[in-house]
Image 1 (cartoon, rainbow, N blue to C red):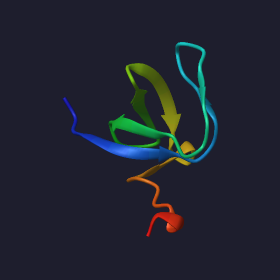
Image 2 (image 1 turned 30 degrees about the vertical axis):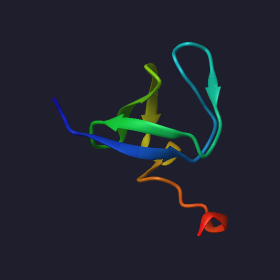
Image 3 (image 1 turned 90 degrees about the horizontal axis):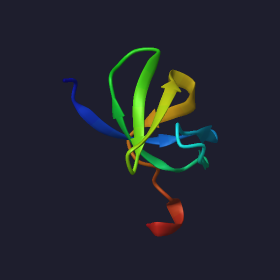
Image 4 (image 1 turned 180 degrees about the vertical axis):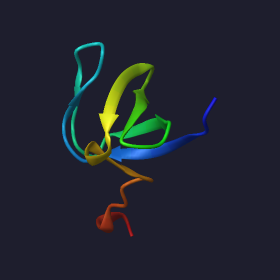
Length: 63
Protein backbone atom coordinates (compact mmCIF):
# COMPACT_ATOMS: atom_id res chain seq x y z
CA UNK A 1 0.00 0.00 0.00
CA UNK A 2 1.35 3.44 -0.90
CA UNK A 3 2.03 6.04 1.75
CA UNK A 4 -0.65 8.54 2.65
CA UNK A 5 -0.08 12.26 2.76
CA UNK A 6 -2.22 15.36 3.21
CA UNK A 7 -3.22 17.64 0.39
CA UNK A 8 -5.43 20.63 -0.29
CA UNK A 9 -8.07 20.92 -3.01
CA UNK A 10 -7.44 23.72 -5.52
CA UNK A 11 -10.87 23.46 -7.17
CA UNK A 12 -14.32 22.16 -6.18
CA UNK A 13 -14.43 18.35 -6.54
CA UNK A 14 -17.41 15.97 -6.19
CA UNK A 15 -16.91 12.89 -4.05
CA UNK A 16 -18.40 9.47 -4.69
CA UNK A 17 -21.15 10.30 -2.16
CA UNK A 18 -22.33 13.23 -4.30
CA UNK A 19 -20.99 15.85 -1.88
CA UNK A 20 -18.95 18.58 -3.58
CA UNK A 21 -15.91 19.71 -1.60
CA UNK A 22 -14.78 23.34 -2.05
CA UNK A 23 -11.25 24.61 -2.71
CA UNK A 24 -9.18 24.61 0.47
CA UNK A 25 -10.58 21.29 1.73
CA UNK A 26 -7.93 19.07 3.32
CA UNK A 27 -7.78 15.59 1.78
CA UNK A 28 -5.84 12.41 2.52
CA UNK A 29 -4.01 11.44 -0.67
CA UNK A 30 -2.84 7.96 -1.74
CA UNK A 31 -0.75 7.31 -4.82
CA UNK A 32 1.53 9.24 -7.11
CA UNK A 33 1.41 10.38 -10.71
CA UNK A 34 -1.19 12.13 -12.86
CA UNK A 35 -4.15 10.70 -10.90
CA UNK A 36 -4.48 9.80 -7.23
CA UNK A 37 -7.08 8.56 -4.78
CA UNK A 38 -8.10 11.11 -2.17
CA UNK A 39 -10.44 10.82 0.79
CA UNK A 40 -12.45 13.20 2.98
CA UNK A 41 -14.01 11.48 5.99
CA UNK A 42 -14.10 8.20 4.04
CA UNK A 43 -15.61 9.76 0.90
CA UNK A 44 -13.52 8.88 -2.20
CA UNK A 45 -12.42 11.60 -4.60
CA UNK A 46 -10.50 10.50 -7.72
CA UNK A 47 -8.21 13.49 -8.36
CA UNK A 48 -6.11 14.65 -11.29
CA UNK A 49 -2.77 16.35 -10.64
CA UNK A 50 -4.18 19.84 -11.25
CA UNK A 51 -7.04 19.52 -8.72
CA UNK A 52 -4.91 19.45 -5.56
CA UNK A 53 -1.61 20.52 -4.03
CA UNK A 54 0.53 18.43 -1.74
CA UNK A 55 0.60 19.65 1.83
CA UNK A 56 -1.79 21.83 3.78
CA UNK A 57 -2.89 25.30 2.79
CA UNK A 58 -1.38 27.90 5.06
CA UNK A 59 -3.64 30.81 5.76
CA UNK A 60 -1.56 33.97 6.08
CA UNK A 61 -4.12 35.45 8.49
CA UNK A 62 -3.34 32.65 10.96
CA UNK A 63 0.32 33.67 11.33
